[in-house]
Length: 258
Figure (tube, helix red, strand yellow):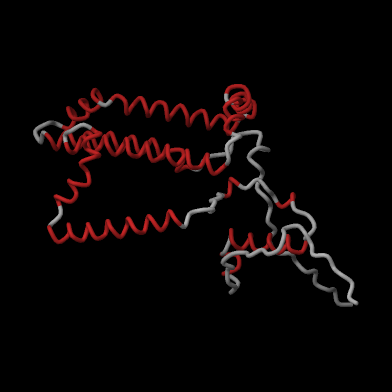
């Protein structure tokens, strides 16, 4: 009697745990942990380079010492960022430490911010990042132009135009007009569009019921989307996405035929 081969199941997709169900803080990626420290380090060496450029006879050690004494706020911000990352690192390892800060220290703030929609919180976070970027850019431009940071930011477009030849000035003006119209149409088409990131989705596969065959098919496709090499190595193709129709989790009633 020949034994029959047992069919093997493909790779299975397991849902990520919800952030609210985590006993500790969600771990940060390496780039998110060091990006601000690298930015402050690059800003410090930029000021050192600016000091040497203003006075070529200034020794390198003196330029570093002058920058350290004049730009102490860079080290202050670096120390605060280092403390913040240490706090995050401990919160990712210790459940008691994470619960103490989230529930006792920042519990009231978290409850008030939870009343806002995810989209409004995303807009406020994006606005804060833009403001921080403009502040850093104005400080750098103020050092380059040897003027106040606010005035340097205002003078930036005119200085760029003046530094270009006449032909490129015309091209810059035409490009600026095209960008204005493109931005206008982009804003007009943004109405009613919401942006969701993976961490914003709180629903998991365990919350869906009533369509087991569709659910299994979606899980299989997500495995291919997250690990395309597993299907491309076997000569297959990776699906570009999943299109769902009708009401999720609700089956159409089967009416008896006459």
